[in-house]
Length: 148
Image (cartoon, rainbow, N blue to C red; front, side):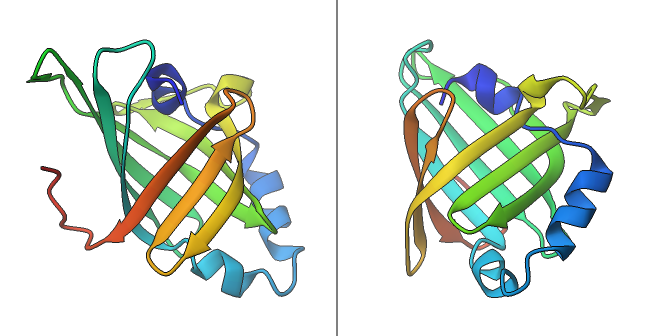
C-alpha cells in the first residue's frame, strides 16, 4: 500500500456503515478478531525504505491509526487518521474521516479502502488491498506499543 493510500484511507457514509454493521448476523465473532491494536511495517515503492503503522480498531467500529515513514534513516512526522471500519466475511473496509486533525470529505472515494483478509492466525493478520494490489501483514500488540 502506498503512503498516499495509507494517509488517505477509506470512506462510506456513516449511515451505510451503521446499517451495514447491523445487517450481518454472526459477524461479531469474526469482527472481534480484528479489534485491538495492530502493528505493521511495509516497504513503500514511492518512498525510500519503509512505513510502519499502529492501528487501533475499536469495538464500536471506529479506528485510529498512526503512520510513521522513514527516509534516509530519518523519521518523518507521524501521520494520524481516524475513521470507521467493518468486516463482512473476508472483506475488511475502512473509511477515513479525519487526517492530521482535519475532517475529510468522505464522499470522495479516496478515503475508502477495501481489503481482502488472506489469513488471520493467532496474533497475525495478512490482508490484500484490492486497489493497489499490495499485501500487508500486522501483528497484534499492546496499545501502548512503541515501534522500534
